[in-house]
Each structure stands twice: as structure tokens, then as C-alpha cells.
Length: 130
Image (cartoon, rainbow, N blue to C red; front, side):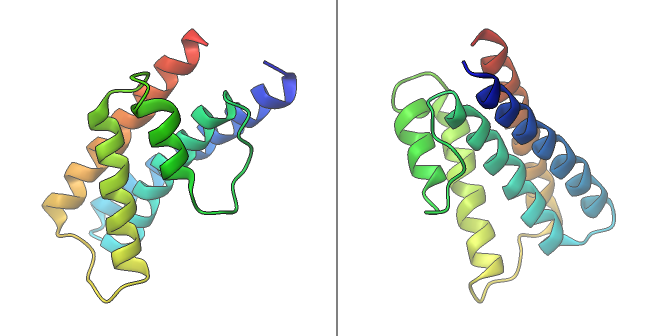
């Protein structure tokens, strides 16, 4: 792995850590739309860190979730439930941000926050083995 790739992975994990911390604060204050955004971005940054190990750089095409599914979930490198959580968070993020739906209720947001924390932990464990 090149030093540039290692730097990119470190950056993405730092962004994921920060986004998760911000999501926790927003959940505590019951700011659901902001919390949903940060939960989604926590998972997004984790997926980007993992994809960097496969030489996929920053993506502007919006297909990070698809690449993640193809490279990590379908190959069995990452548990399928992590992939499902990311897909669910992606859909909820788009529905709340771009659609005409309200963000999930507080209980659901709390569950998604736990999912994001699990995704981050799984990502760090996987990357520690690489």
C-alpha cells in the first residue's frame, strides 16, 4: 500500500470518527436531520477508507455504496449486515435530504447511530489486518 493510500485511509477514518461524534451530539439534542446526515457520512467515509485499499480514490460518481457492496460485501470480506446497514442509511439519508420525507424518529435514529458505530469498528478491524 502506498503512503498516499495510507494517508487517504487515515483521513477517511478521521472523518468517520468526527462525523460519528457529531452525530452523537445531534442525537442527544434530538436534531434528527443533522444526525441522519452525520450517520450516513460516518458510513460513507468508512466505505471510502475500505475502497481505498482497492485503489478506488475519492468518488464523485455517487456510487460508493455500489462499489462497496461489490468489492467487500459480495466477496465476503465484510459481513452482509454491514452492507445492509449502509444501504439503509444511504436510502434514509437521500429520502430525508432530497425527498419529501421527514427524518426517522428518535428511536430509529438511535439504532442507526449504533449501526454507524458498528460499521466504523468493523472498518478499523478490517483495515488493521490489511
